[in-house]
Length: 417
Image (cartoon, rainbow, N blue to C red):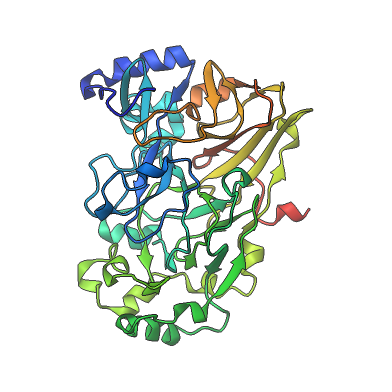
């Protein structure tokens, strides 16, 4: 098995290496696992990383609790590695960043319109997998993130059954604030930051997490993700602000509340609160407006083949990302034809996609390559890609898309129809 010792292709050779990989894969690129640690969380140990490697970055960096997919977005961790969060393409004993590949051949990889508008692959997805809950936090809007030279981060959740054999410690997520909550009450929580538990969860409501469902989380909305392993298509940014001072007995430093706030506003409580979308946080119909259940795409499904929407809807009227779950029964074969590029991760079974093998790993050592992740370029997606189940159990793959790809997308709540 190839390890991270595979030589990195010099930047001036990326174009030639990319051409070879695209020709061999007929528009599909093999991606290697991208691992990200978080110093303030405990790994949930369900993302197939070998037990010996949870602290591969060093204990001081914290445990690895995330795997990022088709990412051209850097992880904004303290003391991070120079390429932390960035996905690598692997072919023929060489490897280079997907970020570099998009810079070389953006139009054919992600589509002319997307490349012209964003000059990058502007989204990514991940598994985040924790033993317990994440602190109640929010992600800044584009407006507030721009104050620190960054972009905002709307995001979405899907809880894949294949990666949730157990609940871990707290399979509930606090979201938003109880209707009627006042800004003065929230301000008091920030004033009490250094007293231990600042009590912000007393102002919120928790929802039990259900395998095979999901949520759409706009920027500026508080949320404290629970302990189910989560597939998370999102905008290509890593901004956040933690509003909870103590979680599972662990201190959350003030620095994590203001890490993406202008320095002159680090003690300005009113400014910090103003980053929240207040109306969305105190929405009396929060679940109705944010909860997702899969919707069958009948036009893309057939006998032995189910293609389901798992992430859909818009954020403030914009189609920013979406995702589907493709399931093939043993022996089934189909051609998926999408209007845009996608990042693919296999979550069950084995088979092939185009000329590339698919195999869901049982265990992955840090630095090893796998056969479960693929980037489907715009050129390949629009031409059509054949997927076949060659195993004895269902072959299941998740794929996520970038902005404005689909002419028609289900709306939040359409699963009830």
